[in-house]
Structure formats: structure tokens, C-alpha cells
Image (tube, rainbow, N blue to C red):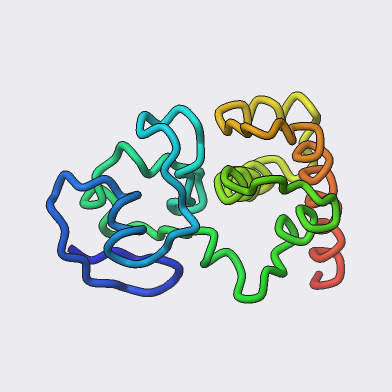
Length: 157
């Protein structure tokens, strides 16, 4: 099958029922996408598919043919995406295991709601479990990312 991952059209030899998570990690080497629960409940496996946050651990890779998949590795070449900048500024990360899923879910949220409220953030990220409990810093970083994104858009516009 062919998958478009991080802007590259890639040929992948995988069983039709192999979850996208394992095709990304084991066959293509994109290990930033994490295995957490295997039941689409924790958010560690979140990737963007055509701009929307999707859990990659339970859906077969074959179902993503013809769609644009973005992993944490493809978000920006130098870690300079506004959400990544905000995460660093706020010092969100403790162990870091959940962060790629948190960051990608935030990117999808900010596309849908450029100025989210605390309730919007809590709702959009409620399925992303952080075993270190960095939820307050995540919320702060989402607000900072919204500001950075707005500032960037004003400079470009």
C-alpha cells in the first residue's frame, strides 16, 4: 500500500489489518508516535490525518491510503511549530511519553478553534492521558500556542 506520511508518498508492505501505529513505528521508523493502551483510550498514538487528530493504534493502515498523515516528526523540521515552541516555553514535558499525542491534538484543536477557552482545551484534550499530571501546563501551553499562532499569522498577513 502507499501512505502519504509527513509529505512523502511511501510504499509500505504491511498486512491489511496492521494498525497504522505499527506501520509508522515498525515499518517506517516514525517512533515519535507512541503505543500506550492499544485501545484508542490514552491518546499516545495520536497523529494528524488530513489535519484531524486520529488515534492510530486501532485503525488499519490500509484505511489511510490517499490521506495525508502527519506524525510529530513531520510537524516541523526544526521544532519551530508554534505549538512546539509553546511547549518548550512553558516547560510542559516531564517524562514526555504522551507529549507527541498532546501536541498533535493541540494542533488540530487550534485549527478548529484558534482562541480556545479552558473548557475547549479540556474537552479536546480530555482523551490524552498524562501519567505525570502536566495538565495545567498543557492548558497554559495551548493558550501560548494560540497567541504564537495569531502573532505569526499577523506577520504573514
